[in-house]
Length: 141
Image (cartoon, rainbow, N blue to C red; front, side, top):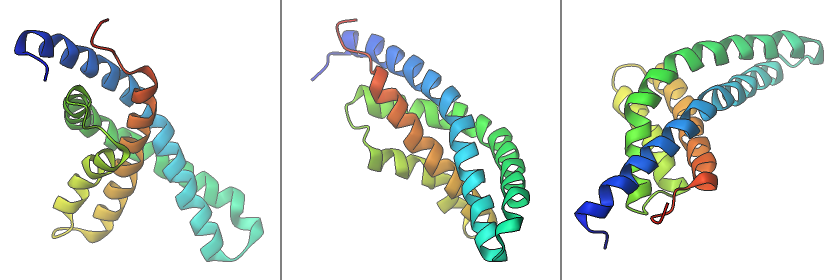
């Protein structure tokens, strides 16, 4: 168990690492989800010639998703992930839950919006965890 005097510096380091990981994962995760939406649209169209146009549309969705996802990721995701990381409870599953929670709250009001929020949020949260664990601060730093 970490004492209170030693827990705060570790939490601060985890916040910095989660912040940096989030700054990198928001554009990358948004681009990934946008391109997947574009590819799914191309499959739905059923034409290989429509692939460039649908991928471009997916890129536009990615840009919008990135702009919308940046504020919640920086105000909510960074701190929850840092808290979990400092307590050694951050896993891919908990990161997935952190990313999906806003979508679960949105389901009663707008199911289509909840799908978008859940898609972007989950991918960004998991990618944030993936990046953060590679540069995780140690208690001795």
